[in-house]
Image: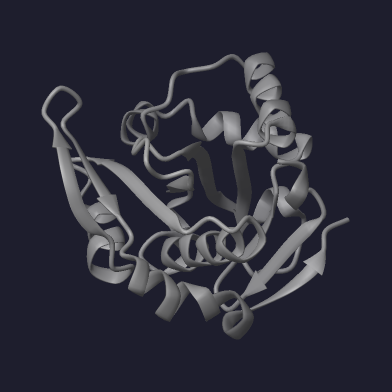
Length: 198
């Protein structure tokens, strides 16, 4: 999405930056891990295909992605921990015209796990999309055996289970509107600084 191409969000535990070509090689290396692909529902891509995917994420209006960086000093590629994304679609309810943001987060680097970085990254992207894209419905789809993600979204972020797909062994959760307003509506302003990414 072009709207975030110059957006850098600095928060307490992480920094979010747009997905740039300089990030692709490390991202591709992460996605060579079979378990990461399984948990994220991703296909194995060649490096060339990964560069094409990065372009797609930058150009398409229905995809929003940020690379999650540590707060350490140094080269961005050395600070990369994972990514956080939104797939934006129209509501499946024909009576509603609103956009729905499907959230995905991956903290690929073990050194970034268990520190609240994923929680902060998801909170930032939801808050940013709520403010800048006027998205008021958010959901997530998680494989039933992904205990860390289930805990993150259900216990820490306040998402509620709405359905289960036995075919995909996947749980769908949605963020209640009152939780969006009370927590995420103000999270960005209270917990981060928006800078220009160069």
